[in-house]
Length: 337
Ligand SMILES: [Zn+2]
Image 1: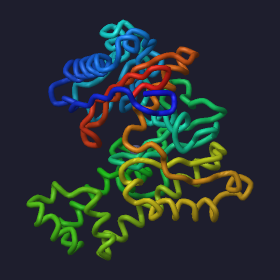
Image 2: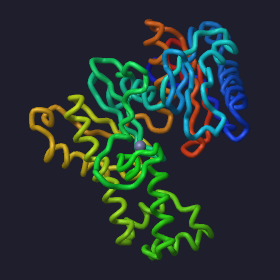
Image 3: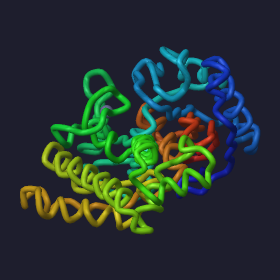
Image 4: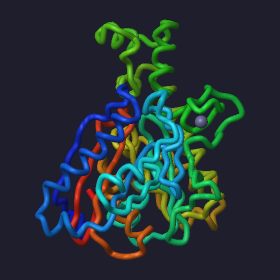
C-alpha cells in the first residue's frame, strides 16, 4: 500500500484453524510470501518489517499469541512474530487485532489527527483499543483495552470470557445468536421461529437474524437489539469518564450494518450521562476503513516499533467466524496491506 492508502498487493486465504497451530502459522508465512512475490523486486527487497494482527490475548512485546479463543483448542503460546521473522528474514511485530485496527484508523481513517480516542468494534465479539497521547495504551502486560469485557450491569448473561453482564455478553454477535436460539427454544419470537425453520436449524441463526427481526417489528428481537445498543452506549459512557477521549470510533460488522441505529443511542447516552466537561470534547463516529482496517494498521505498527518510515508488509490472522482470512500485502514507502 502507498502512503496515501492505495494498495499494491493483497492476498487472502482461509484460516485453517481446524488443522492446528502449525497450519495457521504456515498459512501466514505462505500468504506473506505470495503477497511479497506480487510486488516489483525493488519493493520486495526494500521491505523493512512485517506487521501482524491477531486475535488476543497475546504478548505484543514477545510476539507470542497466548490463547485466542477462536483459533482452535491447541492454539496457545504460538510465537507468530518469530515464525514470520524467520520465513521473511525481516523484523516482525505483533499486536492484538483491535490495537492494530486503532493504529490503522489513526493513520488513515476516522481518527486521523486525533491523538486521544477509543476504538470499539462490535462484531462477533466486542473489542477495543485505547489510544492516548498519540500512542496505544497497552498496560504493564500488553493486554489493556479489552473494552468489550467491561461490566455494564449487575446482572445479565454470561460472557464468552466467563464474566457476567459484559458489553460483549449483550451486544456481541455470538451472544445475540445464542439469545436467538434460546428465544426459538422457548417459542418466544415468531420471527425467529420462522427464520429457523427456513434455515433448517436454529443453530444457523445469527445476529443478523435478530437485527432483521427487530426491523420487522418482532417484539423479542426489538428488545434484544435495544438491550445491545444500551449496553454499548453504557460502555461508552464509562470509557469517556475513564479515558477522556476526544473521539470514539466504532467499527465492526454489526456496527456497520446498524449505522445510526447504534450510533444515535451512544451519542444520546454520552450527552445525557457524561459529565459535560468530558462530553463537550467527544465525537462518536463510524470507523473509516471497513474490513481491512487491521491490514491498514500493520504499517503504522511496524513504523512505531522500528521508529521510522520504512517499507513494510502486513499479515492479518482473523477469527474464522468473522472473516475467512489470512491476509497479507506489501507496500512501498507506506503501508502494509
Ligand atoms: Zn467478557
